[in-house]
Length: 236
Image (cartoon, rainbow, N blue to C red; front, side):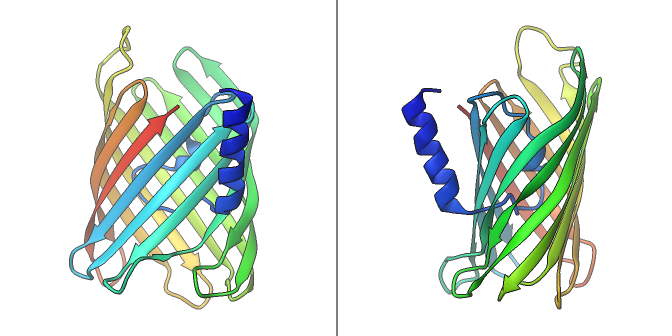
């Protein structure tokens, strides 16, 4: 990535003031990004019963092999017009990593800032950690993030646990094409509001430059809504 392109992307990241907030189809902050590399993801979630659509644009930029910037721009449409649903910037620093062939063990720390949804005044600080364990055809990702809110933005927390199994190929060859089964458990808590926990079942098709995933999301609390989620990720 050239210097002008890197500077442009840095401005986009800083202007967006977001943090990967979307739920389902794997933790975006666990995604490995090489030095100077970038990735973007569009995540769409639709609840037909509630008439609610959520759309999130995630961006990631690799500063070097250990440091990565993440930004997320979430939007929500409940039939009255789309509005920005908050946002913040996250930095990830890898503190421990061990690789052996295609196997990986990685632990990283997260820190950043977040902003209140459109129409409200407030900001917050957030910190947490993310871990990845990949062995053979299986991968586990886990992240936790705590938020201290100011103004209209309340304190909050989130977690994501995902298990991924490579259905095909049984062994990697020259092609990076693969098909994965995904099971996830996600949770969000905001001070003064109901804690949301959900489970996601899905499939993901991965190529060298892009990945497409789709699944069903089921709330574990009441009301027990089932929603559809679609994810498209592109690497630069």
